[in-house]
View 1 (cartoon, one colour):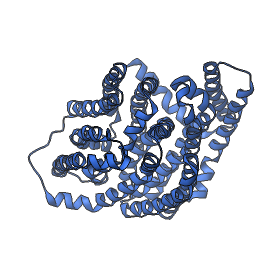
View 2 (cartoon, one colour):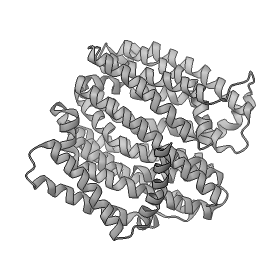
View 3 (cartoon, one colour):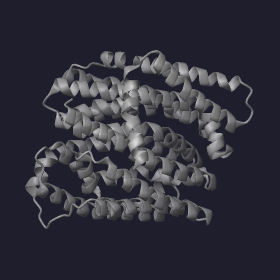
View 4 (cartoon, helix red, strand yellow):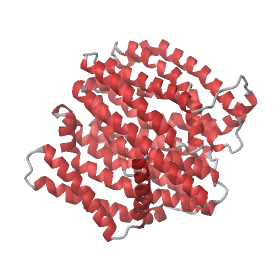
Length: 485
């Protein structure tokens, strides 16, 4: 990478990471409080609507956000055309959800879902007013502003949700938190970003970008089915409480893995796009991103697998203990998720949204086969199926990276195997602490977390893991700068 590009990437990673950590950290604290105040079945009710909200949201953007990032010569006419398109489609999508609410409730056989669906549909309209601002900030690799917006919105909406939960509003406290988060975020984006739409619109501009964005739209639908089909199956054939345990375990696992993959993925896409024609340079950037993500993600996932039981007991109370085995299996599956993100971003940066779409179809077919085989044996069996599907999906994603950049899966594994080995040794050490005779679960959790950090850092130093030293050198001065600020 050139000095300017490297500096831009590092700054983007730093502030993107802080945005994720700040937002997710606050949301995690809020979710812990809400989990103590509310019942698993109330979280399950919201989870039942996730797929419908996500599909409607994907219609609104229609892949234009990614197209705007990928297009190097995008202008104000492109931005305004997408903005007005988003607004129009958001009202249409919200109207469809409003009318479809009785059918959704009938599918799950839960009448309460009618008003919940109709109120949540407001999020679609609210979000539409902030999509362009978020896209422009991402294209500029300006995650510092996004961090401010996310943290403030999370604090304000979290306060509303917790207050309502204390006052006994139940599932409606989760609805209020969701709407508040999107509303505050959109308002703050308009406040911090000077971009304003002009009264201009071009169908030609939309058609030009839709050639790229349409494939991402269809890929997005496939991805939504891939990620949320389990919510439909569990919500339909099991109880809301079962779905609550499933979604709680999934959300805990996603806090670290989505922070890592989300931060690196959102930065690497625009950066990879900027060097899309220089493939040797792009390969060096992909290798660096891949090893950095593995160095951080592997110890977090394996560590969380080991400490899952005391963590759930201490943070969520015993009523959530049935989700522990789900959480442990999700962590195993989460080992590969950041690697999926990097390999897919290579395709997007190269403008190969067609390959992205084909991969989505193939992985969805594998997922449906997995569900057809495992659903009859219960939720645990379905999660085992997800692990197998994740492994096959990584192989498929890496195939095209090998074709485009001459960076095959076997070479990727050679680059990350040491991080996995050191993380496994750390995880084994933490597991042995279960036999140390520490009866107090809070003390056990603290001892395991502190020991895990010490063991992993020691192992990285002892084996002189190169990327670990680079991560430390990159983070340390910026933490000092942030502290001075």
